[in-house]
Image (cartoon, rainbow, N blue to C red):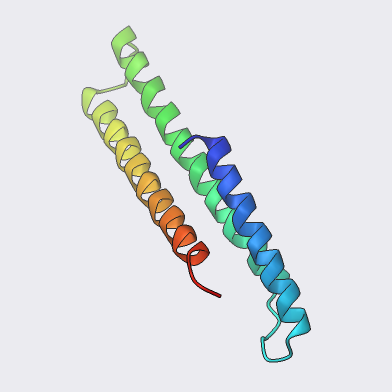
Length: 111
């Protein structure tokens, strides 16, 4: 899923959150939530995506530098950074899959 698709899913989640918050303003039984918490989730998500991108860029740069023969870069450093970026990407994909699945479950709930 590309960054645009993830952004689209986030926009849909945020619009649903706005609808819920509008409904909670009308319903006295639903407690008000802090506005900071709503933006905090999207900030964390975008920061995580940016960190994954930076890890991949660093691994690619290190591997290219190793292949070019730059001094001070060992094969073990390159392999560790590549494994870190691979694990981070796999984790990001799994989190995305869980978010999409949770969103679909919520949208399929009867009202």
